[in-house]
Image (tube, rainbow, N blue to C red; front, side, top):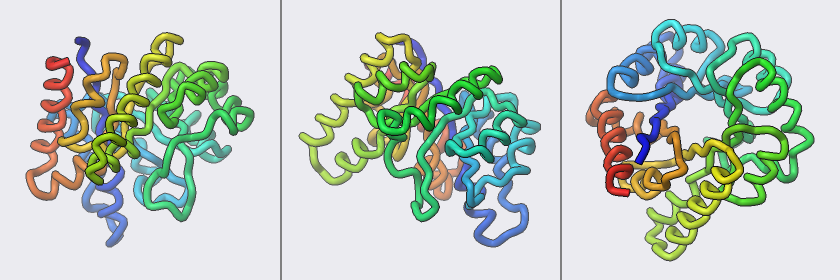
Length: 248
């Protein structure tokens, strides 16, 4: 089976930095370590409230690594202007609420297609690969195709929650939804990514879905890095993904 790419989200390095102010620890340094450890891309989410990644981190990361940068962003004019000026390799459109701790659920493109479509078009016109962070739903996938998104990232958060809640039947059903949405999207010519909340214990079943080309993982890797170091955490996640592709 084709190797799946691993995108490492470095947002929470910036979260630690911002808790005290100053410049340490540097997200760009984390990006460099992730690159050396086998990451295939770097994901960063520039939020409207700048709670972690800041504007000057964008160029700092670009200057530090050779990996493609995936910019997660809300569908706002401010973020669109920043993306068009920065021109990352990819832009992933995500839902965003100021009061949330992390992104809660996928972007409801079936309901918000008129709002989302202009952003997809403008980013594509700028030669930026566009992805939509959505729930694993055939309807959401179909609407993503209709508004011209070449990539979708399937939200794996519910699957992870069910696994850790000990709900085996629920987790199996959610994994089935992920698999069916991936198959449905790939059949329509959409590139399939997945991510949110994945851990060493939950990544293999998702990585084993043949249509998934890329997994974006951040919080768990950064949490593990506190105990084993960032290089070791990235390498272990890379090994888990590769093992799943081989086993599948």
